[in-house]
Image (cartoon, rainbow, N blue to C red):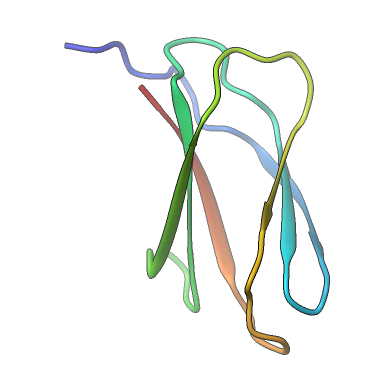
Length: 82
């Protein structure tokens, strides 16, 4: 069985434009193969999900989610996967 990451990434800032949001979060540096961003129109709603490969990294990870509807509130969550 694969080892699990020992903590969640810290999503500490989101910069928004009319149609996108750039998420800034701290990395997880153990047992990491990719990150998953889940988002939707309500808390804990995983209406949309995107995953991308990413290994160990020192520094802040920035990821831009595009094609968002203007004047719409979105809720984002980031998790580390292995």
